[in-house]
Length: 393
Image 1: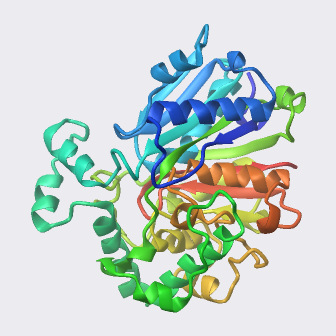
Image 2: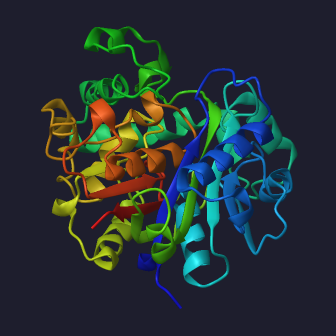
């Protein structure tokens, strides 16, 4: 039996990222999976495993397997989960390959988040109130207090960090502007227009302390990641990107709609529980990372992850961004494609695609020189999440 380290990403695929795809979620999922197979240089018929995740807003594996015309499906996994499992979906594909369950497994995410059902939108909220999607009784108390969407949940977490460490909106603005600077060099990105501090400050409040430009985009689109054995990947079209380590987990007190409401400390995130093991299993250190794709559902989420994954001390992440240390030429480039704030909101899987681009040397104007190792995270400021360390070493 192989280990996860014996697996690799051999292909990536994606659709355009837009405010109106004009296609069904199934259609765009199929487009992305076909593109990943073509990128790897294999026929779609070689795919024998599928993994996806979503909250009643995606096209699940049975539908996509049928749409692909697969003769057999040796492995499938449908997570009922949000962006905290974006990295976990790829890890799940790698574990299926490593344990011999399947040979070529595609992890994908597809959604029409701008024109259809959107996690955190009113339709999703109505669904929660009338179905058993989540069994926690918490919404009856939160909804009646006006806390009905992720921006309001994460705003409370951000406020705790502000009170404890002196974090300010200027720190949030630095994250938003950094991501936009990187997106301006990314032809996939939805938002490429430069952002100045005045633009940030002019954007309306959504849920204090978050302005509109503190919040991720609404996007239609899909992307897919094809995982196979490292030996097989070496025979395919692209440079293999190795999966050196992965983790999924967090605090044992991750109950609640936002998987964090019962935590002991709300100015911390899931990284405090899993970061050390993630780096140790990969056999690398934080200082070895050439870039980090940090899940940026909100600007604050980037700051707390930067701290809790160990790249700076608590309370110092704002200065890290304001001083340019997260820029493409900085000590740790962060969200090199623009992230969820400026590239697209494909629930975090697009951050894996960007990491693969960087490690292949396909980043174009936004390429990090000599990139060989990178971190990808999913989960934001919550106490439940996942992460990957990818490399070409």
